[in-house]
Length: 120
Length: 499
Figure 1: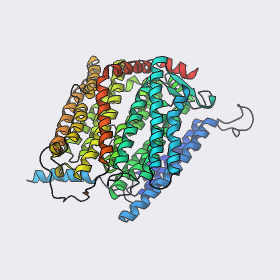
Figure 2: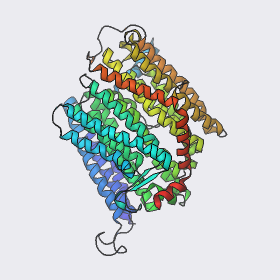
Figure 3: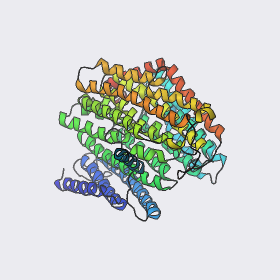
Figure 4: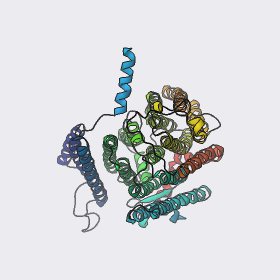
C-alpha cells in the first residue's frame, strides 16, 4: 500500500468535505467530485499492490480486477449525479438568481410562532 | 422458479424503457407501467409462496462464482418484504393515474417510467446478495427519487430537493468508502462471504465496519440525528410520489441494516442502536406535534416509526428481529395509505394545512373512515396491525430489559405511541371536524379535481390491505419468526450462497 495514495485520499476527502459544508451548490458539486475521486482511489487501494494490467498474463502477474470494475461503476454513477446537481443548480439560478441552499421555511415559521407566543 | 427472481427486477426495467419510448400523453404508457408493475408484484407473490414452502433460492447471474459475480438471494426475509413493497407501488400507480389531472399530479411522461426504475431498484435491493449490487440498487432508487422529487421545478421542490440530494449523495459516497473498507479487510463484497470473514477480524476493525455501515444505512433510513432531510423534502413532492417514498425508501435502509448487521453479528453495537432508536422515536413524535400541515406531520412520523424497527434490530435477539421484520411489513402499507388520504384531503379542500381545512367528516365520511383506520393502526391501537407490531417490539424489549439502553428504548416506545395518537387526533380535529375556512388566503391554494373515483378506489384497496394485514397477523408473525431465525443463523445463509 503506497503512502502517496493514502495521503492523496486523505487530502481529497478533507478538501471535499470542507467544500460540501458550503452554502453554494456549485462549491458542493466540486466537493462531491473530489470526494468521489477519493472513494474511487480507496477502492483501488483495497485491491492490493499494483501489478500488470488485468488482461495480461496469469493470475499471479495481474493486478486485482474486481475493485477496478467496482471503481468504474462508481465513476459512471458519480458522473451522472454531478450532471444532475449542475442541472439543479441551474434551476435554482433561474428561480432565485443564486445557487444557495435555502433553509426549511416551515421550520422557521414554527420557530417564529414559538417566540411570538412567548412575547405575549 | 429462479426466473421469478429475475422477473421482479427485469420486468419493471423493460417497462420503464417502453414507457419512455411512448410519446405524448397517452393511455399506452399507463398500460405499460401497470403491466410492468403487476408482473413484478405477481412474481414476488409467487416467489413468497415458493420460498415459504420449498426454502430459499440462490441465483448466480452469469454463473460466476460468488467471489466475483452478482448473486441474487431469495430467502424468506427478502421474499416476505418484496411483495408488500411491490403491491404498494401498484396501488399508488392507480392513484397516480386518477390524480393526474389535478394540480398535484406528477408529470406522467416522467413519473410512470421513473416509478418503474425505482421499483426495479427496490426489488434488486431486497434480493441482492452482495454489497456492491446493494450500492447500485440504492443508486437506482435514489436517482429516480431525485428526479421524481424535483421534476416539476417548483421553488420549494428545488429548495428541499437540494438538501435531499446532498444528504443522500453524501451517504452514497460514504457507502463507497465502506465498500473499500470491507474489500480491503475481507477481499470480497459478497454479504455471505464477507460476514464469515468479518467474524475473524480484530474487534476494532469489525466494529468500525459495523459503525460505518450504521451511519450509511442510518442516513438512508432517517435515523436520529441524520433525519433532517426527510421532513423537509417529502411534503413538497406530489402526493403519489411522497406516498411511495414514505412507504419504501427509508425502509430499504432499515432492511439493509437488519440483513447486514444481523449476518455480520454486530451485537456489540446493540446498546448504541437502542439509544439511537429511543431518540429517533421521541424526536420524530415530538417534531410531528409542532407541525401544522398534514403531510409534514406524517413525514415526522416516518422518522418516529423507524425507531421501532431499529429497536427490534438493536436487541439482537431472535424475538427482536422478528418484531422488527413484522413492524417493517406493517409499516410500509400503513404509511403509504396515510399519504394517499393526505392526497384526497388536498384534492377536496385545496390545501393540507390544518388551519385551512375542516369539516370533512360530514362532507366526505368515506375519507374520514379511510383516515381513521390507518391512523389508529399507526398509533398502535388494537385490533389493527400497528398494535400487533408495536406489541411485538415492546414485548421483545421487556424480555431483555436487564440493561439501561433496553429500558430507555421500551419507555421511549410506549411514550412515542401516545404522542402518535396525539398528533393523529390533531389531524382529525383540524381536517375532519369543525368548518373549513372559506377564505382562500393561503398562497398556492388551488381548487382542482381529478378522477376522484380512481383515487378513492386505490385508497380503499390500500386500506383493505392494511386491514388484511391485521387479520393475517398470525401467519405474518410465523413467517417473520422463520425469517428472523434464518438471519440469526448466518451459517445456513453463508453455506447456501457460498457453495
